[in-house]
Amino acid sequence: MGELTASDSNTLIDKNGSVIATWKDANETDGTVAGYYDGDNLVYAADKALEEGAKVNPGLDLSTREAADKAVSTVNTALEAVSSERSLLGAMQIAWSIQLPTWALQLRTCRRQSLGSGTWIWRKRL
Image 1 (spheres, helix red, strand yellow):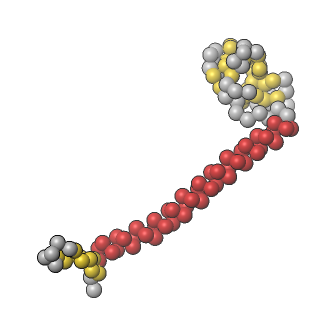
Image 2 (cartoon, one colour):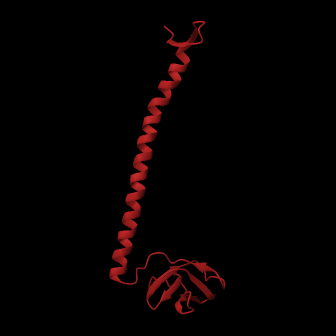
Image 3 (cartoon, helix red, strand yellow):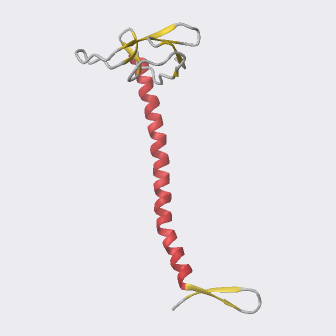
């Protein structure tokens, strides 16, 4: 569907100037949420009508079963990518939380001694 533009407060148009959706107020009786609709299908939910010239990207198309299946697949792929990255970051955090205190302890308990030859020896304090 791509980016849509509010031609006035009541309609959204595509890049070709075709009207894609019209504004409907929320209706508690039938459960309709406020937003722009293409017939009975919600295209873009909003608290209030957009100002003229405002641009929106409706995101996932849920107008048909096939489009909804594709949207679910897209969301699933994104969630798997996020989950993978979070597990990697969690593993790194655990590794650092173990390693950093070890290094800090080594730095506190080690001292250096000069041998006079320019080399340094690090030794744990007893």
